[in-house]
Image (cartoon, rainbow, N blue to C red; front, side, top):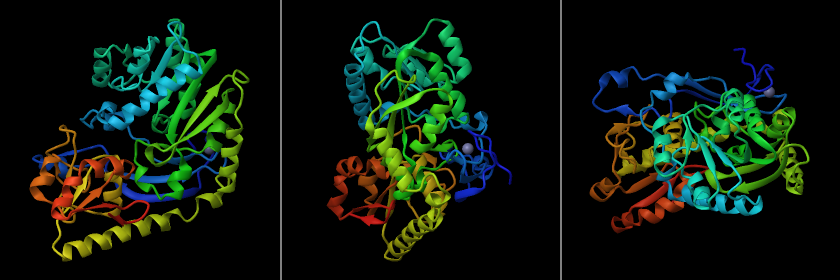
Length: 410
Ligand SMILES: [Zn+2]
């Protein structure tokens, strides 16, 4: 195979991990449509690391067609924790950068307006850019003006020609999802005021490697980012990183602040985190070795747990039908005979089957009825929230299980 780096176009030769062929992690299968089960498409799920610019990346680019066949809308407002995170962000940024009625905040992939609504409440003008029409319509409905479009350098030029210039640009958990990351970030430069700021939040590859978060790998998640790589990208397009925050979201994320060179004072933390990455050898092939063996240990420990629980006649359910869980179950090769059912709050998913594993998705109400002995929390990053909500399982002696970074029964 002769793959070229998505960013620097040099040949890729180092594999971080090869997770085999899996269906798209958000392609839920209709339970009563045998054809959709039989014809389910699978794609290779493999992450390689560029030994020149240090971008870790999937090797397959999935067509927009296949991605949009996934017929449910992800709405950020479903997660109360995430909306609270967005609220804090709006308060902090508006104070720090002195934003007011004459400023402009632009969010890329603004979804249903979960974040920009907090700037609107502060009387700060906003614009959302969102490719999904249904999410954009919800945003408009709560007073968040939104353009339905994909964002890249070309669309940024078009917006800029309309006179739009941003004092603050936001992209939360979108950088990793863009196939052409260079054009995407260049678009920020085009649309920002000379004194403006852009912030990007993304899961930090240091957390993925350190906590064996292989289940955060899925096809639409093209890039796995270090600050080392981002520094390469940002300096190549003529911008600077002036601050970084470590966040607990998604198992360990970074919030990176960029600006035009010298427009803002650079914090010491930038070089500090770069030095931490050098200590982890994220600028050398050695930093990426040995990951596959760690993944195999996590999946085999989980399979042993499942087999023992089944032998004891236990009922096992999962909580959370989402991309993470789907990668995890498909890589571990867990199927409907191993896990009785998975529950999810999203009514659009209930009644369908998980992609690949074909485990039925039910309403969380089913937990009270079917009384599982073990509830596997698939989105481990939300474990505290879920355990608190589902304390009712203690009534029949039920226990919670998380499998990443290691098997934990509690
Ligand atoms: Zn590269």
